[in-house]
Structures are given as C-alpha cells and as structure tokens.
Length: 316
Ligand code: ASP
Image (cartoon, rainbow, N blue to C red; front, side, top):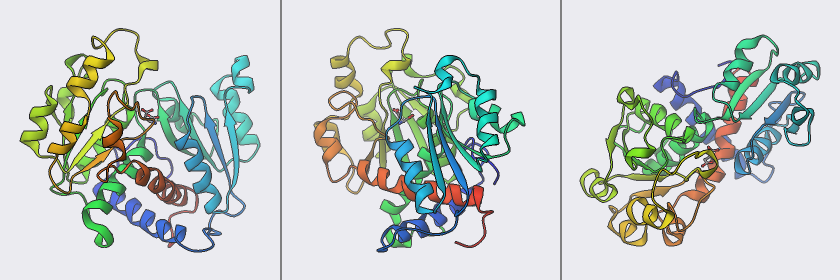
C-alpha cells in the first residue's frame, strides 16, 4: 500500500489485514512501554487545513508510538492563510524530507491531488477531505464493531451478517461514505436513514438500503449497530430541516429509541457529538455506546496504517 485515500478500493483481504495489524498495535498499548521502534528516523507531517481534535491527536499519538518524528502543521497561522498553494506547501514538506503526510482538507479530492501530483514523494493518508471520504474513521469503526461482535476471537474475521444502520447528515458526511464502502466490503449490510433533504443525489449506486423513518428502520432491520452522524452545520448553506427540536424528535437517537434497540447492539458516533440533537446524553453515555472505544481504537488503527504505508508492511 502506498497511499490511503479511500476505502472504496480496499479489498476484503486488505481491510482484514489492516484490522489484524491494528489488533497487534492495540496489544502494544497494553504494555508498560507503549512504543515500537518501527518508524525511527521517519518523519510524519500532520497537514491540517480544517479543524480537528480527535483525528489530529490520534495520528500524532500513532506516529509517536511507532517512534516517528512528527510535525504538526495547521493551516491557520501558516503561510497557507497568506495564500500559499497546496503545491508550494507540498514542495516545502518534500524539501524537509517528509516520509508520510496525513492530510485533512475542506476540498474533496485534495489528498488524491497530492498523491498524484508528483510534487511530493511521501505516502499520503486522507484524514478527511470535504464531504468525500475519511478512510481511517471507517477502519476504526469496523475495528470497533468487529471487537464488540467477536471479542478476543476477532482476528482474521470480517463483518459478515452484521447489520448497520447509519443515521443523519449523509449528504455532508465523509464518514458515511467511507463506511458504506468498507462495511459492505467486509460483508455487513448497511441501511442509511435520513430526511430526504440530507441524502445526496446519485445514491442509487451505493451498496446500501435507503430509509426515511428511523423508528421503522429500528423495528424492521433490528440493527446490530446504530451509527449516528453529526449534523454538520458548518457545511450547510440552506435549511435542510425545520429546526433542531424537530430533527431530534424525528431522527435523533433519544432514550425511547435506545431502549428499543436489540440486546447486544451498539451505538456509535464519530464525534464531535451534538448532544441533544442527533444523540441524547443518555444514549451517548450508555453501555451500548462505543464512542470512547472508537477514540482509543483510532490510535491502533492509525498505527497500523502508518506502519503499512511507511514501513513496507513486513511483520510487526
Ligand atoms: N470528525 C468527523 C469528520 O471529520 C465527523 C464529523 O466531523 O462529524 O468527518
């Protein structure tokens, strides 16, 4: 693997391999010294043109646990805010000897542009591009689901037979897109639930069922996993639903809906959560919720990805 730009082109075997290596990385996190020498002497740059808390810290922790040197570059306060182009920024990083660049960018396709440009020779990891993809989020979600479903027997397994309902702002969600491709590749069935205004056009080609009624989806699908998405107000240029109270009432995971979920099912959210809007505080903090596990698992999954991209994918 040279770059990780999307989950769409990952095969089942690639995906299972990444998740298995992430299991090994998670084992490292339980040791007293949580560090491997694998990327000693390599430089990873976190190039963030958009705000992030979890993802940036998670990539930083992952790179450091593999002993890489890490440079955090946020576009605010840099020459990018003076109008420096992506090309010039990339060439600066190339001159500094970056081996891996983790990119978050408001424009869909920016990481792909970097990877194909020839401006920089580093391995590129997409850490979220516009409304397009967020592949490491989907990998950490798949890892979290696999662990909750199969516990210590998770290694080597896919998500065959697991049913996942993804609810909310599908239109603006790179998390939903990356998850649709990855979870279905791993054998899960995916149902998307949202108001009609929050579905993108051209969804007919996605390998997912579409529904507009959350209550009916919970009762008919009996999902193993309910994944709630954040309402991405910062990307909304129009009114997509009447008001937040109405959204929470019809499409939010409130306490009554949580109580109706099948035994053993889990509730996920990529964060940051709008508590009281797409998810109630009780649902977010319940024993079904994997929100904190998702954050912890993110480090293991990103270690696996950096290892595969930058260390050549030998034995861990
Ligand atoms: N943190 C995720 C992302 O960057 C989800 C979200 O922001 O709602 O896409």
